[in-house]
Image 1 (tube, rainbow, N blue to C red):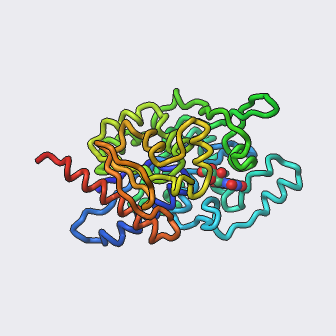
Image 2 (image 1 turned 45 degrees about the vertical axis):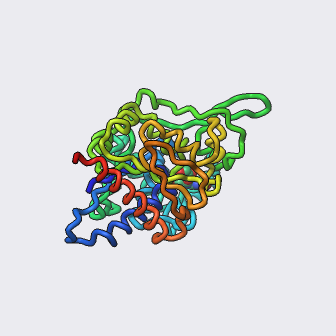
Image 3 (image 1 turned 60 degrees about the vertical axis):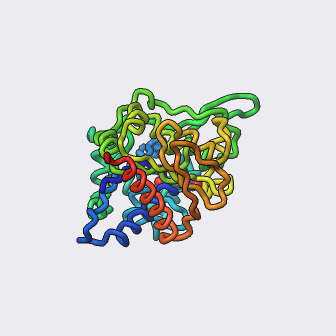
Length: 331
Ligand code: FO1
């Protein structure tokens, strides 16, 4: 069974780890169900160049979380990390110091930058990094949304002046508390979907949008030319999972991002961003959203407090997708 997911960082990675856990339980090896073949399309708008190295936060969070090396408490970076390199860079006065990079994490950025420097496309680099994390053995293919370098920047207001800063500076240094006027994604309108991305959407049995940030993660992937059309045209049901519980994001700043683009901070507001292709919408059990013709709403607890809780959520999303697919199957 081919599942394709569009994913950002922490929330998306935790959800997909739950999906793999659910699949291992529901379709044990050798069972009559065919195996789960998961293609993850990762957001690269978060990417930033630091100390001359290319850092891909959402891609790395997906690699580390699915590969078993994530720092569980942070949701990003490596477990059992040390920070000798960062400490010496600080002693040298190297900037910036507001973005924490651990020693093992630095190895990812050094190796990625070495390969990119030789002209290797990002998708080929991600394939190398995926091999180190054993993703193929998990039935997972991780693709960057594009090989074109893109970066999300935030136009902020300060003393009446507008200036653009990198998304990471807004998100990490200013904890998204600096009033944002709008998001601009340098290079996105000229980006080309990475090899396999559009086919993975068109050829899927079910497409899933995990509870990643709908504006600066999923929203960026949707901005890659061709992705939205592929989602509209695929025969696969497209199932989304609300990132809001009780009108608030479980973590991160999805509410601030929605406010910045003038969208109401409700699951209905987020579903409206996906309206032209969404078939099913998983919302929190107390969510007041009304279904509408063509949008099947299912209520479930949406707190991913454990891998098992994430597996229950992911199982519900998959089940909804398979049900809608069966209803669509030619009689
Ligand atoms: N998030 C933070 O809040 N503080 C950090 O210092 C930080 C460092 C960092 C290093 C590598 C990496 O892959 C991710 C990192 N993140 C950090 C998370 C990053 O800001 C993500 O882009 C967001 O979580 C949004 O997905």
